Image (cartoon, rainbow, N blue to C red):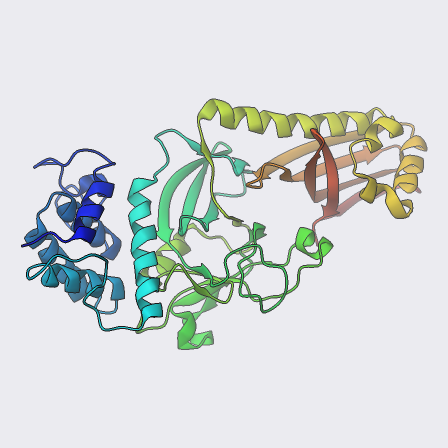
Length: 409
């Protein structure tokens, strides 16, 4: 079989992982388990790429045929199969050269091939951690991170507050990319959200596939910045479609139906956080810990200044925008009128935005003074301005405040 130009380019890219050998097989790409059983359509596609990498195009064709028999609705698999067959007759210069399809559809499939291949070329180094997820509260057993740039949805297990990568899935985002601003812009928001509900297939049209997990967009930060829109979900694909192009939704995160069903085991409705980022930054453990300790220190100094009843020092933690409208003066009087204040924080989660200039901390706050005590779940957004972290938004989360004692304020 002749090896076309696109096949040679693919082999060159795959060779960046490691030199091909006769016995490394598909395990490097996760295509089979220890008994040689194929795990999934993605794994079969990985095995096909592995065979192309090793110039075993007949074996690649056998794998892609097996994939198509498993998922006849996997359009990219059909495209690769067509090229492998055509390569028997003549060299090919591009993916899908022999396909009879509209230019837009071919462009979408080529982009899907690119990002699926990127899954194996751009993996995080072993032991590296996501800079966006710096700490998980104990109640968050798992957390999700949607990496728009890589078209991957990562699942992290909470291991003593540290995120441990356990799975990832190919995903689709909004056709116009990220940074949603207004309703109808067909963009996916960037930020920290919570899975708020599960909608089973029976309550949906076929368009949403095997189910949907609505997110709580817009959150308080979005509303502060005037962002509008609604109905941002994680959902599946129509029954006749295995996967959609990397940018094809109206703003939702879309997974193949089998992947969505598998994802369900990691989701606790009302409690599972999802961070949506333009791109995930993977850093070594030392760098990750430095970022984490920096934000932990911010929280501790803020808490200590509050307990010290030093209003001037405490209010320096806030941006000028937060102090306007009388809020700052009210807070000052409230602090100075107390004989004593005690504040403790627990169950802390910390997320860092991709540009590293916005940190989100969520925690349980236990407040007590000589006149009032309560327990509330609070979320604080810290913004980095001129090398100084300041609070740009502070809110108690709905239905989380418990008043323990009120003796007059």
